Length: 104
Image (cartoon, rainbow, N blue to C red; front, side, top):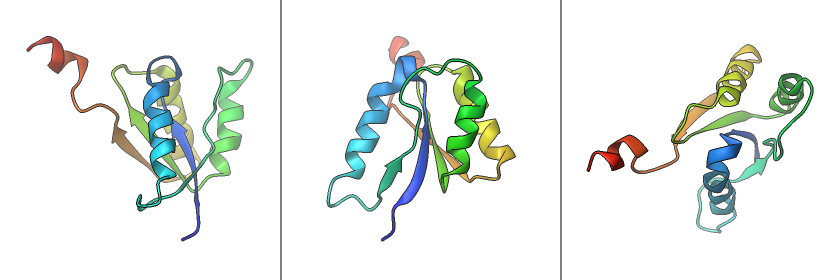
């Protein structure tokens, strides 16, 4: 199976851990998928949207990790994927949301 080049969109400040778990999961021999992690690993300065666009354009798809908060950067990256006609899908990052957890 050929590797898919994947850009992982995630909230760097709050969801770096679930992103690392997804990348780690892809390395297990019994996992039915492989990814080449093309996500941005550090905070970007300057015109970060154009830097993100360049990386997204080099990928086959975008995985959007849906975390506890709505990050502005993630919304912008989804819009870039749409503009570049790169397929994307949303992946729920946590079993229970903070809202659900705090009401119990």
